[in-house]
Structure formats: structure tokens, C-alpha cells
Image 1 (cartoon, rainbow, N blue to C red):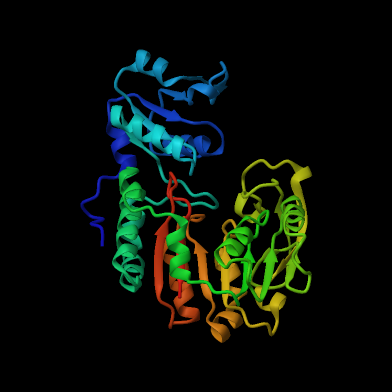
Image 2: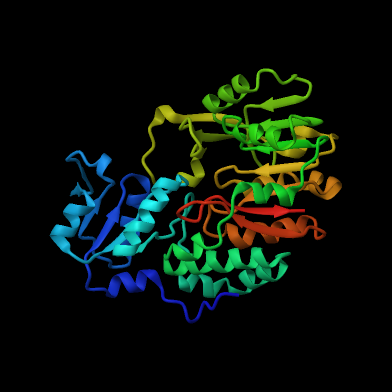
Length: 362
């Protein structure tokens, strides 16, 4: 496993450097990084954006500038990437900037608190080593090492050298034409579309859960041709039991439960009470062969709500591992506790930062 002890901590380096530090990007990611910088005594000298997004506006009291203007003002500087992207053109732009300047993409949690630092990794070394030892192939261990190095150092190179296309994940899953698929966090039906493409449109049944009303309506509209008998849906979030929770509806992938947004100002009009369902309750006695979990930080609870299915059917699993600080070790351990017979594979698909990190359980 990657040498945690010998790693250079990003936040310590930023606190000690004499170079100007520039945050690249605006919005939620930039604010999270700015908050951590404040806690870690890291001085920020400015903000920049891609040329097309610079329109004379400001962020956190700084005028947002083009890179060329930043270079004229500061010369050599450190760039902190504060947004996520899977778009190849944007990734190549970030790589080009890293060729000219010291560049990092600080790891901050998508949802929830905590921060994955060198100290955090040392504290959870036993769990990290346990997960590393459970990985079924060398590629998974390389992905894990690159992920661990990235999260401590902020360097993007360890991520980039281990990324693979989604097709490789589907090769691991080896889906056939008679799958009964449960899509937890079905969004607008995009992963159902992927599933149908992989299986040539052949399947037994699809069970889909999506809590956001707008996303749910899009999913139903896109897949209107599927028979209601074969395509069973519920406008609900995946959880450990059947209940009702307050939910922040954003009409996108980032809709989330209120407990995971505590302390942040929330527009009251976006707060809705929604139904939460366990998968065990939703599918009852149906035998499930494949489950996808991408539920914006509720993966642990959703796994708890799938205990019966996982123990009874041992379905293939795809579990997102990037929403919470602890997901990378907590979720693989939980899966193997539910059913010790799984083989675990790890893949990250092209993305900066370490999003789209998936656990495949066979």
C-alpha cells in the first residue's frame, strides 16, 4: 500500500509555501476549499476561472481573473482546482496548466464533514490496509494507491495514470440478457440507458428508485416504452428502512438529505418531505442479480436496507465510493460484512477530482 508516513501533506505544504495561491473555480467547491484554507492558515491570493467564464464578477471578495491576468500579476503561483469535471477538453486544460504551474485539486468531501488528510489516513491505516488486502486484482490496488496518494498530496497525476473507461467496469460486471437490475439513485434514467446498451436491451426486470421529483419525471419520460410490469419505479430515496425524511431537491445529481447539509443555509422552498424505502421492502421476494448504488452520501444506509437481498441473492454490486470522507474504506468493509463471498474490484473513470470512483463486487 502507498506509504502514508512518507507522504507530503498538501495542507502543510500550502501553509508553508511562499508562493501566491490561486483558487481555480467558483461555487460550492471553491467555498469548501476556502473554508479549509482558513482553518489551516493557508493564505489565498486570488481567484481565477477559464477565460469563457470571466465576466468581471467577484467571489469571496476577490475579482475573478483569467489565468493570463493572474500570471501577469503574480508570476509563478500555485493553482488549486475547485471544481469537478469529466469532460476531456477541460481535463486537458487542467493538465496544461499543471505543466506551467504547481497545481493541486484538494480533496474535500462532496457530502458531510471531515477531511481526508495525512493524519486522517494514519488514524484509519488499519481499515485502509484491510481494504487494500481484499482487492481482487493488481489494477484495483494501483487505483487504491493512486487514490490514497492523491487524497493526501492533492496531486492529480496519481489519479490520471490509473483511470479507465466505464467499459472496463461493465466488463467486470459481465452483465447478461436476463438481469434483474435495481438502480438506487436512478437520476434521470441515464444509468438505465447504459444498462440497456450493455445488455442489448435484454433484461428480466428493472427496479428504479429516485427521490428528486424532477429527475424521477425525466426518467419515466425517457423510458416510457418500458412495460410497467418489467420497469418498476418509486419516487423515493434508498435508505435502511421505510420512513420519511426531509430532502433538499436541486433537480440534479446533488439532491440530498438535509442531515448531510447541516449548518448550511438552505432555501426553504427546496425542502420537501420524501418517502424513503429500503430495497428489501421495495423488491420483496424478487431475486435481484445487479444493484447500483449512487445515492449522494446515503450509500451506507442503502446497503443496510439491502441486507436481505445481498445475503440471499449475492447480486453483482456497483457502489459509488466518493461522496463521504470515509467511503473508500467503510463501504467495502460493510459489503464484505454483509456477504463475505464477494470479490472486490476498484476502478475510477476519467474525472478530476477523485469522483466516479466505483467499487465492483462480484
